[in-house]
Length: 591
Image (tube, rainbow, N blue to C red; front, side, top):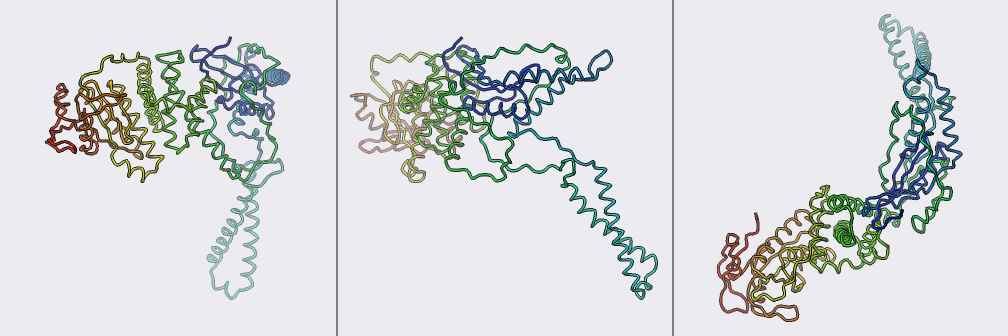
């Protein structure tokens, strides 16, 4: 039966050992052609029957569908089974008619499967048997030849010495013998060492040779982990063979299952190995980099879905949209890390969303529009969760399933009831990024804009948490309002703490804020605030130092429940105001 909703697809390569099918390798959804190519390589080189199965997992229904997309000819499987049975019948029997240890049939099947595993790991044809001379025979040859050569040299030296009796008579017999022995040993070593080195690489008449270092192979993108065939126990050897599965002779072409693709041609396994590593073109490097980024996003998506399934086994459209927002935050982090262009980020994001079963047009639309969703605090909170989780993923830190689950639970809470009446007194908050102009000149426009996006996401997430409202973006900061001074103070402290956490995780993209607050009755027109309350809040923000929060006495008095957080900073003159105002610092560190 068919299922709907998100789908995670894999391709599995199976080998037939004469009795049962065994999983040989597993590929991702984008590597169906590679799976078929490997199956054909094993079939061609080892005469082992193979098949490729497309496995589709539907998280909503917690169900799996399998479809065979390639299978070897049935005659090959029958021939393989007959061969195993013949070996089984010809194997010597032990007492009681039992085969000693594993049966010959199982041993032969296991040998075939191990050969297939070797072929799968190396990507080359099976290793040919190697025969070489025994060590003892080589040792006899080296010693015999060296003795003959050393004896000849010693005889020559002795003959030469005999022609000069006037010198030899001056030496005693013992000394002369020592000289001859030294000449013999030296000549023996001079013959033995090069001869031994020559025999190591000498190919004998049986075609054997010493192992040689394999030729360098062109680099390829990382492949999924391959699984070796499981061992066959003695109890399984006595079991009757499993019935062969019913296979459809009219299998759909793989191109119908995987878009407009065609099967790659079977490589020539008898061709000579490549000895020179080809130069990788810029387009190939770009393609490899994009594949690595896509693999990173797929791994991150699997982590998200694995954590979410614990609390929500089935995902509806609303929760899938939340997952898409978290993926948008993740691609933002990858974009900063790898200096991706906007178009590249959108393409990787769209491909990742499509891997869950989303229609291509829907995935493309979301990837092109996701930046517009960041204006909404509720959406921005999910984007920020995705950024944090991807930063941990790239740093080798396993994101807690509890953290992801809490984010989804918060996402599913109903929207807060909007206030129908405007509060009479509101708290106005300003944030300002310290040194934003110098940062743009030092890091460039792209990096500076990335830092601004991080600032926006942090501030908007805190506004959502503490019932704040964004009034407008000032370019270097955000102006916001709160219905209560307590919420404004808590939001300001949370903003500074999240900024400090961001700086610790990403020291190359640090930012520092100053925050100022004031409370009063501003004038509200067209979703904007005006008046002296707003002006004083902006002046207080300008007085704050780096990483500091300053507020007026009105805010301190309205937030009486947070009295222990305020430290007096004395009276200060404010531009545009005649009187001086007492200011207080909000002590946010250590909260």
